[in-house]
Image 1 (cartoon, rainbow, N blue to C red):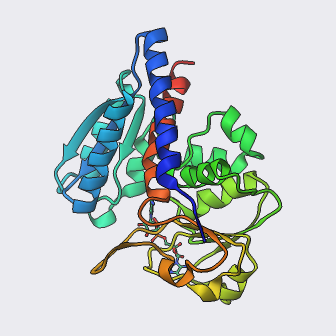
Image 2: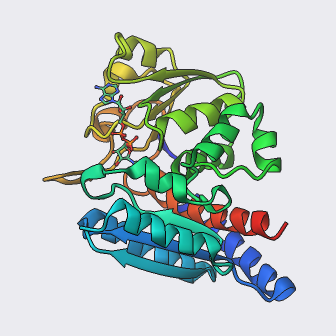
Length: 289
Ligand code: NAD
């Protein structure tokens, strides 16, 4: 087993981002800004928001945090988003999900200016991703793509893992992870199989894969029966269990196989916040055109 070290790859990228922010400041006198919105007091969301604010500070990106109480209506959230859309110091807007009761989430996301949509969840950006024909086009057109999938591609590129011509099985079809990641793998010329809770013969399908991405949200779901030697495994899952944090892959059960794998924690997780910083810089470039 060979570990794909998300922590190191993420740290290297954050150093590069910090240097770019400092250059932007020197050249324009401006600093990119990210606004975060947390509705309610979900403890996991509070931890994520804290890490995002700290990562911004470390990189020299200005952060503007807004806490709304858990009873805030859709109109309250949209009113704040509209204010931030108009604020020239704010280049990116991140609405922390899930919203309490998961209510009206897409309506709130739709209110974010597509130019400031650093989570890539606005239909405009999701549409651009789907219409793109290649990875180069995604980069050249400065398309804002969901942070976790972008982080996964960055991990694969930086680990010199070939994507072109490989069979990639993505388990999970969420708008946040599975779908955009499948599009990114396709843009990198993989042959992509999107699988989900209704997929039959998942084990057999996974056994045909060169790359498996597990984005399910079920602790240790993927075990030895899904994997052949030589496979690259990206574990997106973050599951809190009584034994602590674990991924969607049963790491202990597969660690003696001839595979490359991301650990949990220390794999995809750090990349997600790093890509949020990257997207904030992208949005800054987009606004200054
Ligand atoms: P989600 O609940 O929106 O989607 C889960 C997907 O898994 C669904 O599409 C469903 O079809 C599929 N699924 C469920 N049961 C299945 C089964 N038995 N077989 C095959 N597919 C099945 O979740 P999400 O937002 O995509 O997140 C997935 C996981 O990734 C979660 O653990 C989440 O915490 C984690 N996550 C991690 C990061 C990170 O930064 N590392 C970011 C986002 C999400």
